Length: 474
Image 1 (cartoon, helix red, strand yellow):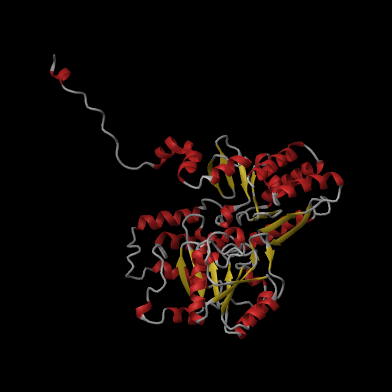
Image 2: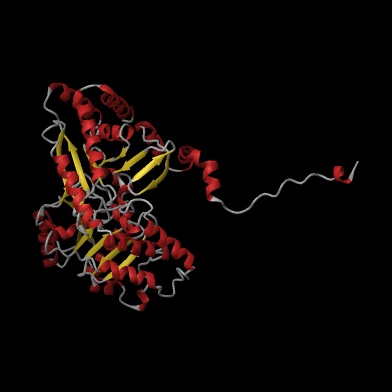
C-alpha cells in the first residue's frame, strides 16, 4: 500500500463567508414555503387564493419583470413607499457612497452632519415648522406626535377621524378608526373618534378641556376620502382657540403624492403644529420617518439636559436613512416629481371619471394627484343586480377584488382594494409614471369593466370562487 493510499482523503475546504447571490440562487425558489413556515402564514395563503403568488425577478422605476421577461405596471408603489419607483440611480448611488464613506455612525454621543442637513432641507417645504425628530416608520412618526402633543399641552386625549389609519403600534392603534385593526388589542389609550369634516363634533369634544390635539389625514388612505374644503383651516382655528394642536399625518399623502409637496397645502392658511412623514422619504430603500414640529413644542419636550433622551430611537438618524432622504429630496426637486404627480394624476383621474356614465357598476372616481379612489356601486340592470347581490351577501368588497385580480392576471397591472369591506380600488403608483402608463392602465381597466358588464365569463366565475372562500371563512 502506498503512502497516499494509507492516508484518508480530505474533503475540499468549505468556502466561508456570505454570498447573497448564491443564497438567492439556491433558496429563492422556496420563498412562499419559507413565509408559510416562519412568517405570517396567512400571507402566502391569501396570495395563492387570489392568484397573486407571482415570482418577480427584478424591478426598475414603475415596473416589475417576471422570470419570463414579462413586465408588470406597479400602481401600488409598495403602499406608497416607492414614490420614486424602484432603484432610482441617484438614491442608489447615495447609498453606495455613504457605505463607502465608512462614517462613525450612531455613536449616540456626537452630532453627525447628515441628520442636520436632512432636517434643514425637509423644513424648507414647511417653513412654519422648526425642528425634526427622525424615526424609522410611519407609525413611529405618529407615536412621536402623540407623545409630543400630550406633553406640550399637558392634556391626555387625542381626537382622530372615523376610518382613519395612523399605524398599528399600540399608541397609533389608539387613533386608528377601523375596528378590524383594533379588535383584541384593548385596552388602548383614551382617545376619541369624530367624523371627518364634522366641525360640530370637534367643537363638542374640545369643550371638555382635555384634548391635546386632532390627528388627521388630509386624504384618508382607506377609501380615498378627502377632508371637505375649508375643514382643515376651520379645525385648526377651533383647536388653537382651545389651546390644542393640529397634527397632520402625511405618511402616505406627503412628498408629492397629491400634486403638492404636502396634501394640507391644498388649503390656504393651514399650518399644522406637528407633521408626520415617512414612506416616500426612504427613496424605496431605507426605513425612515420624520416628525416635524414647532420650536416651542420641541423645547417643552426636551426642556433640560436631564430630558435629552426622553424620546429617542435606536436607529433614528442613521447615515443610510439620512442619505436616502437627502437623495430623494434632491431627485424630487431636480426631476419635477411633484409637478409630474399633479399632471399625470389629473390626466388619469379625468380619463377614469369619463367612464362613470359608461359603466353602471362604476360609481365614482375621486382623489388628488396620484392618490385616486375608484368606487363601485350597485348596478341598475336586473342581471347585474343579481350578481352584485350574490357578492354582497357573501362579503362586501368582493367586486373590487374581482377587478383587481384580472388587472394583474390578464393585464399585468398591480393594484389594491382600498380597505376591508370596501368596494374601492386605490391607485397610488410611483410618482414618476408617465402618460404611456396612464394609457396602459385606462385601457386595461376599460377591458375589465367591459368583461364585468358582459354578465358572464371568467370574471364572474372567479367571483363565485371568492363567494365560496368568503362563506368558508365565516
